[in-house]
Image (cartoon, rainbow, N blue to C red):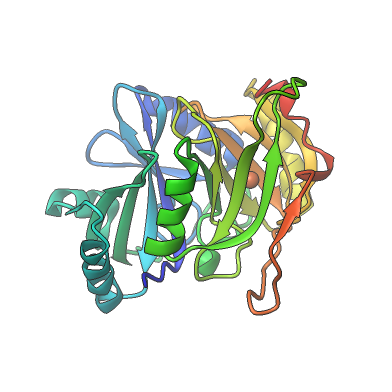
Length: 298
Ligand SMILES: [Fe+2]
């Protein structure tokens, strides 16, 4: 079984990385650093990057970077993928350099989302200095945050994450997005890897043109969420969902549109779960209050 330790980074593609620099530095509060390929590394802790922005023709989400503990875990993962009949490629030296990792496996899930499994991130150990004074982001062993990916081939995709990549179900939600009772319910599965973050990955039963419903980053206090909200207004960034608190991971957050056409959830207060004590449940609401998604997704 593959044991993924964390969602270590995400990769976004943008035709104008300068737009991401402005969004990252002025609104989110990350520090942006030039990448050799004309893209950007966005830093939020002592690692070189937690978000990589690639220059490319499309404005979309490109890949999720999943970390394995060490070289042994990485080579066992490659063997397990082989045995399970999963197609994958080893990343070139050039790609490993670009992602700043020792070695990398590239694969797609049954819904076509691109994943990168790696070991051994580089760290420059320079202090994270936010250009707008955000003191820190909540990362460490919990990873960058979470990502919500489209899974139109839902059953096959969830089976792949559960049986091949070793994810566990935290809870599930089923929703009808119109008032038409004939519309089939669509599932969202909130799933975890080998850390306490309630979900590092959620799978949404539907298509999303930008390749991602949203990605989430976390700050240590509500004041930092409020300050980010002010910066979003000041810089005319589109609000995608109003402030609210999720029932499952307990995060208080709002959502805004990134230059790569997926939403960024900016929140605080994420629950850290002891999986031995956890019982899977089905929630019939996603939020205790707030989170009006109709402002951006409607
Ligand atoms: Fe979220």
